[in-house]
Length: 89
Image (cartoon, rainbow, N blue to C red; front, side, top):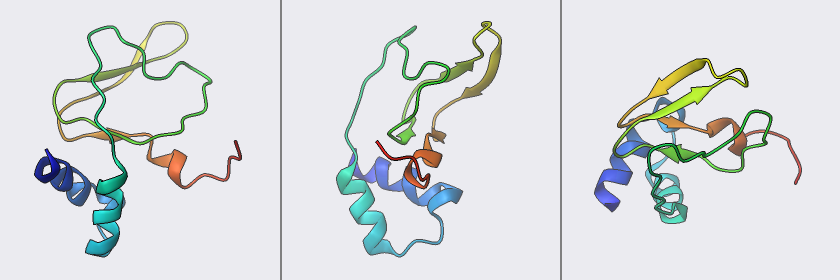
């Protein structure tokens, strides 16, 4: 799993210019979460606090009216804006 996670982080354009020691620190801080079909990760208007890497499966994003806005699959990631934003919790 660590090898797969490392590849996901290293292959993402968001992290492509980071030194390897920082990549390793990011990987060490990740946790594995399992979501089933129809599970909700975020709701519209909710402030995100995590970045997610999709190792297997798909994630769909919907507007408040139910329209699908995006569809992500294996190797994709989302939530990266939360780790660089100035939002204080």
